[in-house]
Image (cartoon, rainbow over all chains, first blue to last red; front, side, top):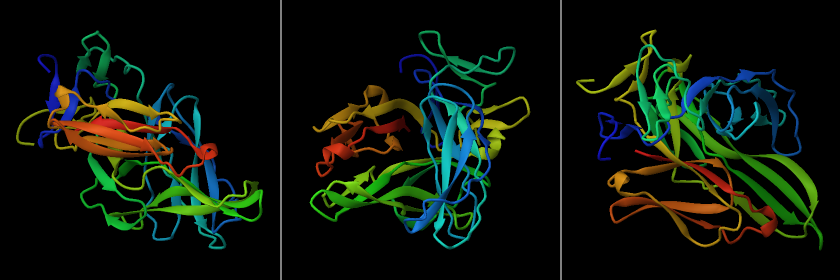
Length: 240
Length: 98
């Protein structure tokens, strides 16, 4: 950059570059009630919580993952292209009867210029005059970035803030097993996360759905990459 | 912080901290179904010596790797050949540079 505005962290990493819109906090998602567990045809059943999501356009979602020594797992979407609601799922082993805590959802606008507060504070503009940051609209700031592999059991996440929020990778898997010339059994899996302690993070793919389908093939379809990705962690308390 | 740049809101809450990990979102990258050949997202000179990272926000039928060539970070992807056509999906990534 020959001119403009650039901020680096103490470690020399990029924090603000005036060419790029910084995702900004538009509010928290509002959770509905926990639905009854369903989909008990696999080895895990799941419960839905529908969240009302503020803002419009493309948004990034960061989630608190409640610390729970019980094996309840969360499937947490990290993106909403449009609309105003999204579903979060909680998984538990069939027959376990475990309860869970609904996570909190922090919503960041990736698309539109932040609301100009004016009057005081700090604004940063792109060369075309569009606003990319306004101190009245709290900017997304990654406290930490975790490189993660799925599945992982109890990866140490020391150094996180007291109330971390996670933007997690998405993945799912279909396992088809031929049962005839034109039929197969389908097992559906989803990528899920949990925090067994405040300093550990676990991930896995849980089997939650079974059905017979017209296929006749035996194949495993993995969608999504299992390693080499990043989890961005925010200090969620900064946005409360 | 010994020196540098912190940003607070009017309530005195620190909302941008140079002690954070950092990272600037530079691209929302949608790799379409049918992108079967190896392709690259090329960072340019602004990102020389930087690191690209990705969060996979939409699971799809692509493998990808982060490499460095000519001093610039590159993101290279290819469709996973074992996927039956019926089950392929686009892959969507948040690409950010640190």
